[in-house]
Amino acid sequence: MDGKKKNFTRPNLGWRLSWLRIRDGWPFLVWVAACFACIWLYQISPHPDSSSCIRGIIDAAGVSISPVETARIQKIHVTNGQQVHRGDLLVEMDTSLIAHGVSSDLLDAIRIETAFGDTHQDVLQAVSQRLDAISAIEAEIAVCRQEWEREGGQLKALQEEQKHREALYADRIIDDLTRIQLLPEIAALTKAVALYPQRVAMYEKQLAEAQKYYRNIMEWLGAEEGRPVSDAIRRRLNEEKVKELLTQARAEALLLKEAYRIRAPQDGTVSEILGREGQVVASDIPILRLVGNSPNRINAYMGEAQVDQVRVGQQLLVQSTFRRNQAKVLATVESVSPEVSTSAAVLSSTGRSVPLRAQQVILRINGPHTFLGGEVVLLRVPSAGFMGILEAMFGMKKKSPNASGGHS
Image (cartoon, rainbow, N blue to C red):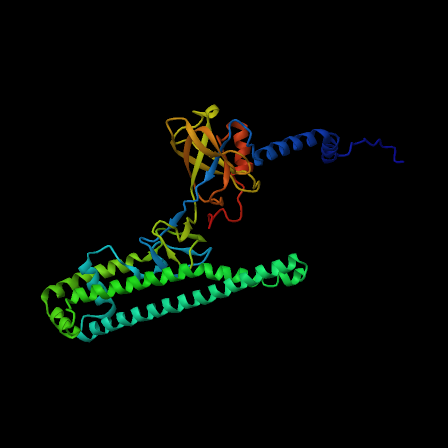
């Protein structure tokens, strides 16, 4: 011992004391974390039963594509799910059944000019082809009637045989297997015979069209019965009036032909094809349905208890009803109906449409999104203050993988 007195110094435990204080205060930290977790879960979860929420539907912005006139589908150029652009060719209709839309003389000129040209030999060939077409259709009708008569006779004979077997079965002379042996063939023949009237009607319609076409050509040529057709063709083609008519007919033919080529009215995706090639479709029957690539409008309805909650120009939060990981986006109110009326609005979580006394609201989604056309969404006013900050932190800044590119 050197006899010197040593001073005691307390070791520096600052960081250890801080850690000890945090360890001792862990219940408080757990409660704080639990509160933040509850707030976060509340923000990302939909609240459809809240009085401040409004249900809406993403407008699919779809259009049904129909022909301008009743015609046969010649070619469908698209498939389900295919993306198309405005002006793309979707469907080609058969122009051979054009029977109205222009005057009789002009229609005759269109048919002759567009199909056979305006030379003597071409028109003579047109007359010959029409006669051949009439003969071919008449032969088809004759064959169809013969088959109808033959299969009808077979069906009648089988039905008589079946009645006889039923009687034998009732007397327990034959077994059940023998009794039902002819039933499949009878059913097939019954179905086939039932289709013959439609086939005959179709052939007769084609025959009427071909005969009308032939009469129109002959009337246009001014052919007289018993005189050579060549004389009428030569006289008609030398008339200046016909030349002018054919000039006008060319323009009309192009317009008619283009009208039978159905093009996409907007950019979109083919969602459903209702027709098939070879099918005759009326002018008011849709052939396919086209939906927009990125729907950005919402149709919503406010119940009477929610009237006057929103106004034009106000921004609402849009949230998916089911997809909790869907990013929230803002939508601007474009219009609010001035009255409360009975409307069909989607109210239930299953998407059922039920009558409701409501005020209609139309909104436009701001920016890219991944909502699907026809999807049911929830709309509500963004929260203010601390809840608004949390909303911005946990809701608006959460992006899905496709959010930057929009819905395709």
